[in-house]
Amino acid sequence: MSARPIAYLAGIGSGIPAEVMTNHDFAAVGIETSHEWIVERTGIVERRIARGAGESTAGMAATASRIAMERAGVHAGEIDIIVLSTASPDRLLPSTAVDLQAELGASRAAAFDLSAACSGWLYGLTVAEGMIMSGVAETALVVGSEKMSSIIDWSDRATCVLFGDGAGAAILKRSTDGRGILSTYLRSDGTLADLLYRPDGGARRPFDADVLAERGQYVHMAGREVFKHAVRSMADAVDRALDGAQLAASDIDLLIPHQANLRIIDATAKHARMPMDRVYVNVDRYGNTSSASIPIALDEAIAAGRVGKDSTVLMVAFGAGFTWASMVARL
Ligand code: ACO
Image (cartoon, rainbow, N blue to C red; front, side, top):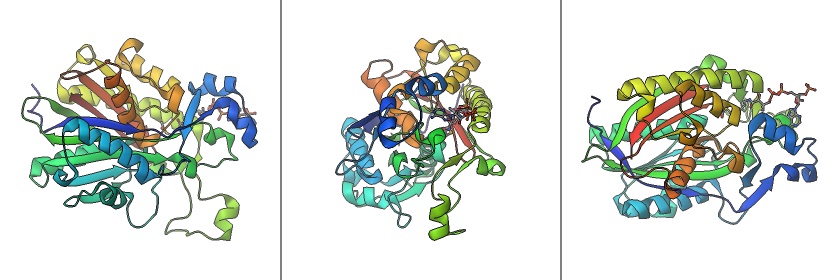
């Protein structure tokens, strides 16, 4: 038997930008690619681009958070901590989390950003769970919000076709009835950081004319290497989360993998021996929204009736760092 859960997901929400960019739209911005190439290699058909009023990283986070709060029956004043995972903060200082805290009017909340790339939302849930366990918090807001369109190089066809914008959020509260997080597994390997990174623009090499000329402020990626590590690490993470919860794949109602690439999702599902009708896929509609991808997928899966109260979900992610993470939760 797994230990009694400490915290459960009391409400989920997402904030999706209005503008749709299809694979066919790349021609208009001078990118030499094709719908067929993108679909065959990634499964992506379209993605959302945050361009509208209020669609900043904090703005999308606020939309997702308000929905999650309403569904959880939680008011802003009840939130003790806000953990906002992002690789695309609105500003480098202060955190995007404090802008969200101000926008929500969460007057008593401690707020901070968390940087673990695509694994960040699962990292954030784990941090928040620990704070609930230690008595620091009763109610936490955990958000993944990304404006990836602002950090990708729109002249690099190997990366710009992959990403999209959006946000997802959950209210985490102390568990009282056996529902909640049953297991968590977090890992990282910084020796591989340079396979997927934004080389410059931080303290090590601040912005200057050379950085801009080299396009060092944008995401650079060794796609094939990332692919191999993602498949291997997500398989490992699936096994660890199931072991931690002392469950078998047959006990899982829905596998919700990070939505980066349909081939990575297929490989993860195959490893887990989960048929695709028990795997959630929306990468075709959103591309890779980094740390927002799992909460957006979970929100959609609930809205579609694929899972509901007492369903058991397995969530698994991999991203820059490298970081990888998994979690089994009873909703
Ligand atoms: N359109 C058309 N051709 C392209 C494009 C494009 N958008 N991008 C690259 N190509 C070309 C390349 O120039 C290359 O041409 P060449 O053979 O003439 O040199 C050819 O396609 C093959 O390029 P590769 O990079 O080797 O293609 P690959 O089969 O590895 O697919 C891809 C690339 C889709 C990026 C794949 O490596 C991948 O998905 N990797 C995982 C990356 C990922 O998901 N990162 C997200 C962050 S981590 C995470 O979230 C899991």
